[in-house]
Length: 295
Image (cartoon, rainbow, N blue to C red; front, side, top):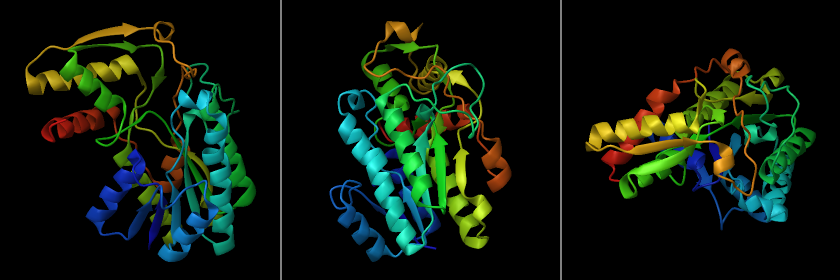
């Protein structure tokens, strides 16, 4: 099986490249400027040169706050680009796995969202990702939309790396404690993608296609995540980091964030035999790796 990942420098694309290298699975991760969701010809060249059996869209406009004033760009990448990629996959009879987000939901209540629950994004980023989901469903039957949330990794910019920087540079942080979700490792997401791709290849079945949720197990606040990051850092570095939990109202941002980012993973567990990992173990592993690598 040969995989093509649209996206190269993002967290999931980088994690997928690391995992497939270790497994010696043929996987080409292509990103800008050579391959761009806003450039149909570049996508065609990528697909026709790699000749994959399975396509993954890990590219997106993910600047949540900037999207509020850059709506056209967010929709061009997250919606129009996704539609173009789906069209190209239809023409070549290729399955497509498209990464999406809990931000398609309003984030109300305290129950984990299921795949069929009503969508109602509260910011431009979420609206653009929802438009991408809709476009893919309209164009391509052989699709898997994989929604996840609170992604972090040893790579790029994310919450874990930000907290470690604050621990090192400031020795303290103020973190919101009223947004609840499940911090999810990009490396685990990459493993799930590979598991899905293998299943689709080995036992093709139209019933496998559709929308799925995947996150780590356990639901906590950002302040809880920061507390574990600092605890792990303190154990390794022998210093105390100050943490002040605050409400979201004390940390205003241009884009509203969902207060409830919980996602129900029952469907993907049953269909693909996926076992979500406990969030605490994965966060600790990432913190220790980053310390070892000299962040």
